Image (cartoon, rainbow, N blue to C red; front, side):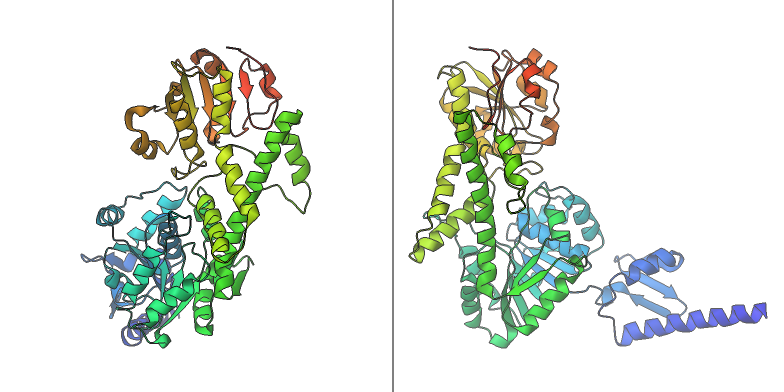
Length: 514
């Protein structure tokens, strides 16, 4: 009985494996994401990696190459490997899709192919390495090669502000024109870049010049990624916004995003123009909160109030909430400045005076000068011969992005006043070096920046700056003076630190006078 049972089990296994091989050879699989991962985990004793890196499953006569199968859930192309494009492509690959990223920058593509991630974003390098190694994430400079099998093409292209502040769509519309000559099967074209309302219609019109309209749909799918936590934002989104007019496009987009919202967060389908407007409205509102709190902080200084207490009292109101109520030296980065400006220009082009947004931009521009003005005033209006240590150069923590960074405005103002600068940032040093060269001194460690400096200016609230040794600060600075542009230290605790301490919207802790 035992022998018969063994023989029967062996024969059943043989037949099942033979049938699997037959089905794969003759009909193929479309949705078997994870199948080979399970095979590899459970039956690693009969897998091997061939010279051409095609995994083979071998059992009796059932032999087939993974490279011959459609293993991915969907074929995705991402045009543009900037911040948004690289995060988007990597995260889609992480959920089992086959992703090809396209960029015209040959050197950048070469580095990506060799495993170099050109931006700093926590968690991205791990996903990038895994998905490139497993063949789900690839890179090319050829647009035709990159999109040949794509079911969905994401346009993640730069839309820099033009001279009048409006978004420059030349990259987006140029790629749309290129795509119109090479698409040969139904494809969803997705505007992932932040673009003005009506851009999807422009893309549609360009594609329709050469393509039958049955071959494509244009969708708006704005990104809501925060630099520093972009991978988490993508993998676990608060919401997904999709502007799509056709049922077919909506179904494809829902299928693509369904793995990201299994905890119940919503996918909002809407018309294309509303989706385009949603991104601008969200970023402009958040920028408005920041500028409003900076105005409150500046008034608190004049009235002798503590903006920290005001913030706590406001944020406890459920109608307001606690987010984006921290005053500082203004907002920066690639999104808020550009998007607020672009929305204001859109309003102007449509004969609407968006006065709040104009005020938000004016307040933010002025706020970037607040910290330098405090420093100059403290030293009697003269900085010649003074050295200012700077902690933080990126526009926010956990990124190396210095676009529109307040640190640049502050450093420029201090240099103009005659100061010398010794600066440190955990990630943004190379980027800032491209701007200043040897005009400022960049050091390798935060305390090294303090040696012989007359004051410390904290501009970016990196965690590494939150619990420093004030004993070391006092010893290394020529005069123990700290200017905190992000209010990262408790003003009451600073009473006993033995330093002159100035922050934003709070009382000055009097220490050393010059």
